Image (cartoon, rainbow, N blue to C red; front, top):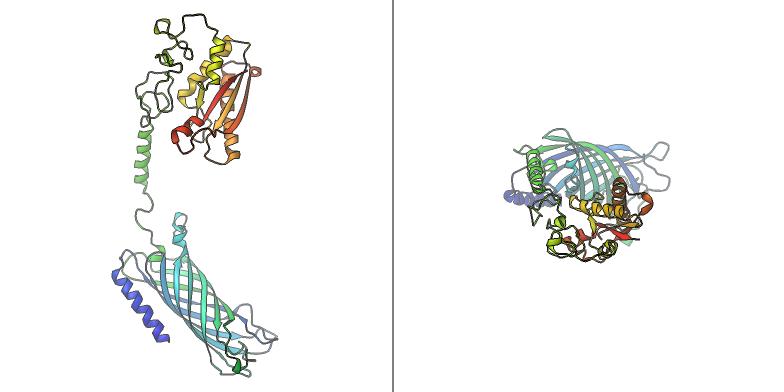
Length: 423
């Protein structure tokens, strides 16, 4: 059976190796030694030390890639009694075929360390347990077993690493207790399944074989992480994208009118706004929210009460301050809205205003509520800085604006705003 397992491993590994890439070394020899601890079955009154020095194993490992591989290993040792308990001595051996997973690469350890790794192994195999004392002396129990464990690695160089392993071995078809004093079952009742458990804790070395510089345990594919020069190029490209040639607060790559005059009120796409629809852009319209002819600078000819039109424009949502995603700093093109409101309040001392903050539907509700309050507070502070008495201004965050299509980026931009309400 041992020869069959060995030949199967070697044939499979060589077949895969013939077609694999050669960017990294794939073979290693793992040598370990340390402690064992048999847990069961033990006869009543028999105990083993918590850390019994008496285990060793050696293995041949092949990695298909930097994340997965397999190994064939042989382990052997001796169980003994703890001080003050009945004497026993039992030899054991095992041979196992195991799959190996490079947990360190799966969890991207290379982003914070290049010297620490972690392997997980799981497999099955054949074993023997032979008591050397007590009633069942020299009875050779032949068992099957399952093994699983974790191996911590410290890279010492390109050809060697230090290992610390903890493994659990579960055996089946075992007839005799580990101490050799009693049998588990009468022979006429057959065998139970997996009924023997032991642990091993070892330190050892892995020796890497092959002509490449790096073994699969430590290999990181080229291009997985950007180089310094690549990052600098990407940052440069982002800076170019964020250029704002006309200074309206909308970067050129989003600006559909990249040549708007200085001070013009624009929407989130950089287009000049005409709030009252009279054909005169707001920056040239002396009555931006009341339609009027160009001959009268955009103001109606008839006598009009300014407060009525302003309140209508506010209630209809024509005056807003807009924000970038996850920001409480007003976008540059929104400054004229704050200036318009402050000038109106100065001309109409009997009028008060509430600043209402909103957020889009991206993110948790409580976070968006706080963000909307910060946005309203930012506009409130600007009005105070413009000379408006705080008793005439209030602000409140209204959280998410659910009236817009949250799947649309343009609609979400309109939701990130602060509006005004005349009181």
